[in-house]
Image 1 (cartoon, helix red, strand yellow):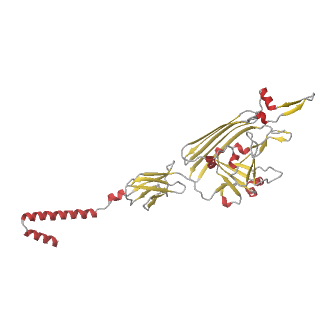
Image 2 (tube, rainbow, N blue to C red; image 1 turned 90 degrees about the vertical axis):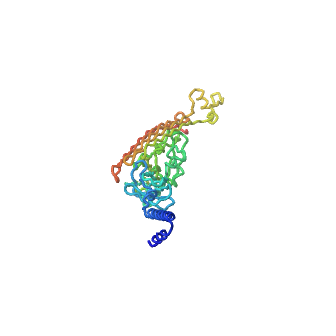
Image 3 (cartoon, rainbow, N blue to C red; image 1 turned 90 degrees about the horizontal axis):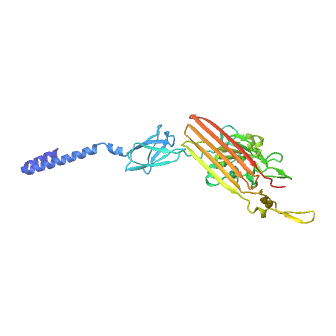
Length: 409
């Protein structure tokens, strides 16, 4: 105030024109100062709105809100946790856009870049299996942690193997992938299988074939053979190969006599647990596999032995049965066709999940009596009417007819 009075006094002594100009300059300076003070004192509402990002975190497919998801703005150190409705808000951001990283146990990490100031961001997380304490299927109700039981267990991840290696039979899945399990090769005939021994031969008087369970239900594990002549028999037919690998999720093999505490004395020779595929939430998924091929026996006439015989006059004759049958129009060997078709459909949502599969095989061998015709179907459905309550139905059917030719005698 004292400065203003001095300025007015000084102006009073100046000429009138100069006095008016000086008064206008003084008024402009005062106005600029007032505007500057007002701007500095205003709340930063506009800046706060530009530095905020908010939205919702939901589950992929079901769009269910994910409470507790961690949302972090990359490179800023700012973050928050989604509330019970999946909502989140991050404030104090700067710049034009920000990259959000969202994490939650049991789901895959997701990142999304959004403009700063957006308030309707929706980030969807896909479910992902996590490796905690491994759980295996046993003879008791429910699952058990591997470390809580005393049995030696080998696990074969069928779905992972099928993605990287061609698999035709169940025995192909097990062979070389489970320690202590030996696949004893059979013949090359269509429909023939191999004998399975877990940790060697466990008995001299009973069958050494392991027990087979499918989703906790025991199935026929007997091995059969074809016709016999002069003490020579045909190859072995294994019940394990009745199952289509495309319908299997995993296989667990229990080894050692300790398994008998769960499955009885017969389990001393081992147990093979087959776990079939189940439906998963998230739309419909189709899988179709078609296999076509042929079996041939090249140069059969020269490769088959020639029989010699002497007639009553003492003359020696040669007889090639393969050549003779060809001349008669009834060949011993032919080109066998392999046809295999497999189709499965799965899907559902958080409340209802399903899996349906069918498999057809029509295989012919090089010998006219060797063939395998089979078809199978499997279906399961799971219903979750409440959070901690599930209902499941699983059914399967297998029909197989195998013809083996005599290999000796």
